[in-house]
Image (cartoon, rainbow over all chains, first blue to last red; front, side, top):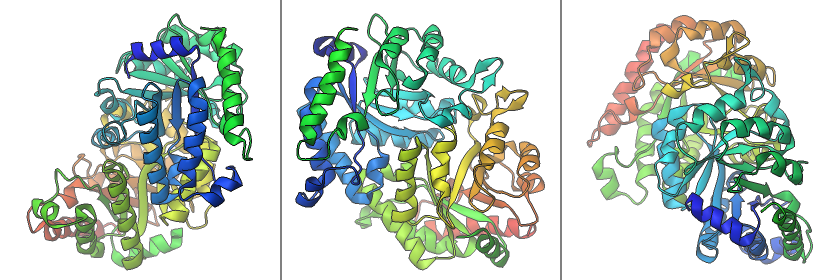
Length: 270
Length: 270
């Protein structure tokens, strides 16, 4: 999906919500586990159908599928295919946080873009240019580089200073030159909304993928205040807050309600 | 596998060679591709059988399996099982370079340690403590944290200075405190052997996983000069240099020859 197509989706639907598909059988409704052959896929389908009208993107985190082995990977592949077939206008992100030396990143790019037909993949920056560039060679596909993450551990290295400036700002500035605003985005944790202003000075136009609104405690108003651009420039993700809104028979309905609530909050900023 | 078991293997076999299993169908012998239902697994089995007498560890890189989708993941699972069943004394590393927020890293740890029964997994440090600690909670299992990688891109961030000292030294010092020499190792690229001396000042006893000897141009003598400890403390990996030594019918034999050559070189340092 191209940048202009993504922006059009956001303007049409009047939200920039990304729903994170992180299935955890310990949190999923019991009746799904008992009833279905592939409970993860069944859970995801119902969540996707319920929330699709209220979001512009889906983001499965690969860890939650790999944890269940081959069956889990199969659930992931089915989920990705289901989204592409039924919701081709939704932006599809593989939250995989991959990154390796050049020839190996090339294999990952092939896996996620060619085989799995995702629009984007999250990428870890530690190994530098040749670990990211292979993800930038596909038209209409995106590398979403970890800039500032929303977890506690982001203080360990990301916020340490290099030449008087935090590592995450160095990472964003340096890596933004490897691609363009048409094929790169950055992960920026919402719990540090005040840091968005500094980031926007470096990349005024790139899209940011913002996790941590909801379960991780960030505020949508803060994120918008510092992160919004004339083309919106934001995808705000919520996973647990939406998909585990209920673990009863009404889980999909409650997920839709939570997604709608967030989408409505976003409307005022479009 | 515990540290003392690993050291014993090295002393018994008189080498510290790790064979990287990075199957690429474009480089594999044609007759394997034509003959077999699961060419990756067949290729791996022959490489494993041929090189096992000359190495102490195997390291499949997950990217090379994910690139082939479900079939590739199946080949990976079969390969891991084959090694565990037939070569239980070999140290088994999943070169996956994972790392995510705490609850997600927990899922990855479950995938690689519980389901796939690997001894170790490589981990990216950018997201900090809570992205690494979930990998340290299994007895006899290891997190191998990226310190200094052997690729060109390692200059982009790893070698930048924080408070007058390179990021990779900060990463190694800080993260080494999250675990012990019994459950953590570090990836240190062999193309920068002179930097090993600085690293050894910080972690005099931890094992280092050293890629980049061979195809990537590092020298074994340099690595040993600066990296060896009284307990050896090194696993030196070679992938392409061994597994693609020939792409004819004699590929396994040639791989064995290359592995033996490296193992023999190592003997003098034990």
